[in-house]
Image 1 (tube, helix red, strand yellow):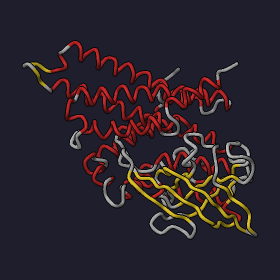
Image 2 (image 1 turned 180 degrees about the vertical axis):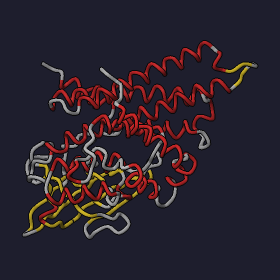
Image 3 (image 1 turned 120 degrees about the horizontal axis):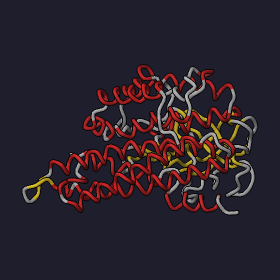
Image 4 (image 1 turned 30 degrees about the vertical axis):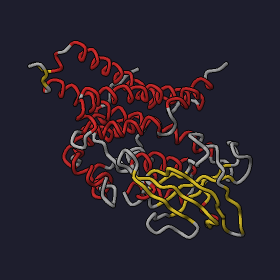
Length: 382
């Protein structure tokens, strides 16, 4: 596998890293994450107007740049390295992916809003009883004249408090766990002033991000809120979620690079018994093991990006393998980094504690390590 970036991809990486190096100070970003807003709108505007990364992977017909999976990997890795909390994956990968694959003039209109930095999306898919299985849908939508009426509940809708638009899965036919019969709906949304029929419970997650639990009770939507064909949303959801897995694998790699670099630097400076602790052979061995896990995670991230264009079964198998590999590295490197920093590892003052919390969340996002290990095993059976 060739890990070499093209000149254009390297320029993209340098541009994103340079922007974040100047504009995304960790102390300021953590303060913004803990504020009432929960993010930095000026940074998001910079992503659109100065960097153009909100449209870097979207098609040219909606004013995007037409980039592919490698460009997505490059951007996501740099966002992870800077510990960005703005909803890039939820909007540009998940939201835009669902809209692009669904098609239609309304979807294209919202996609142009994403590129311009005016639209942010949240995907309401998980339910209190579904676990990571996104086709386990109990929320129902029924026709009522020229409208759709939605009833049900969604949980851990990440970025919902920041969203301008909500994408909701609901069952229009079939049984609870069927892949057929799931439909996808688009609606404008404001968590601070929710529409009639929607109850919103928002909170901050452990990794300084925001999410909401939603309850729909006779929530009425117009007929054109339906995206794509009725009951056929799973064919749109599955490849979109796989693209999101590739993005968060790259984000985790960015986090891991930073955590390992900070740990090695700390081991050079921290002294015990009159010498740097990095001179102790046992700790050197520990950091070498961390480095090996990082290299495997990097390879898995490249595998995930390259597999997005593969046949569905091959893509799903590669993405689950990558998620397992990166999840294992996230736990091993994160836990060892905290231990090597001693009691300071989980303090607010050091970056490593904040990165560890994000890595813990990434390990479970879009399916746990155990879930993807089981998925991989199921896909490799004769």
